[in-house]
Length: 395
Ligand SMILES: *[C@@H]1O[C@H](CO)[C@@H](O)[C@H](O)[C@H]1NC(C)=O
Ligand SMILES: *[C@@H]1O[C@H](CO)[C@@H](O)[C@H](O)[C@H]1NC(C)=O
Image (tube, rainbow, N blue to C red; front, top):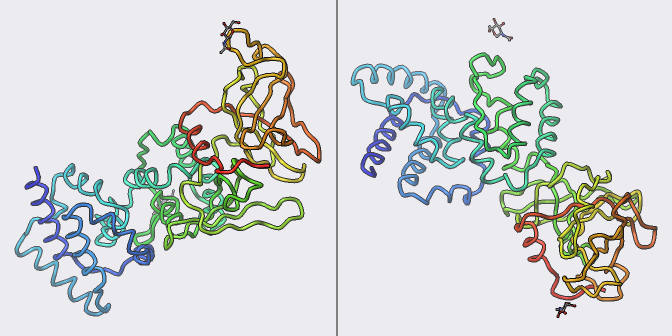
């Protein structure tokens, strides 16, 4: 098996050496600007290293246009003369197998090699996997919509096909699990040397190079500012490939200007779990089932002009209940007590009570306003909040 793979790669390298040279499209250069760590993924497998090195030396030595043409012609003659086997003669499955194992950087380089490889390397099917692996946890429906607006705002994007958008939205709502195959045969937008703007690869590159600001949520905003401990706020984010962190811009709080935070780590980001914009009240659908001990997130804002953040808490027992499970009746009561145990007992932030039957936004200018509630069902979400637990109890 390994021998077979090695032979495949060898013939692939031979093929690369015999390829006609062509100017690279713009995005291939862009990819090269990415820092070295991006290529590190390659060194996983010694064979990738070989491919990487040969591709790099090949790609970095582009001769002038005049000699290109000559070479191109003589290469064609050569190919006809010695009729060597090329990578494109490989069985389809083997070639697909090689491409599927290539990391993003190598796929980009490969796509610059010839038009036939290009067609394959930019295929959405390959890039879906990469975008899902690297960006799946922080990219949600809102980010996808934003990307569509970004495309639509660019010239020539007006003839994006309606049904194509629908199928991506469907794909997102199935958590990317469906494989989405589309034919490019009739796509008049696809010019020979430009990457189709609506391709997944183009989206990947826009994220990866920090060209595209996307909406997501940040835990403990403003770098653990005590006022935001155990909360999660909406922000616009831009990736910085040099530091592998993000810049976050939080929407203005009333008259307070946009807050900016640099160096936000991957672990502090999440895709918004529900599709409620930061200024809208989430309609709680879990009120009737809340019992003591449940983990929740509740929308909270200081002032009605401010965006909501999501705050972590647990459902507690009523004052009249001693917490003994055998006679606890708290879950029959109309009042639900919410505990924010990160605050010291007696703090005005530690307890809040809401009405199970007709909960809307509740509160006042002093204690802030409590909005919609979502019950946390996944252990992963709960353990994320526990990891963020402050070392000191808050006043
Ligand atoms: C695509 O281009 C071909 C010729 O270049 C043209 O005949 C055809 O009508 C175009 N199709 C669309 C959908 O624009
Ligand atoms: C809960 O109440 C029952 C019955 O009243 C009692 O037997 C039990 O010891 C109590 N449990 C705790 C933990 O207090």
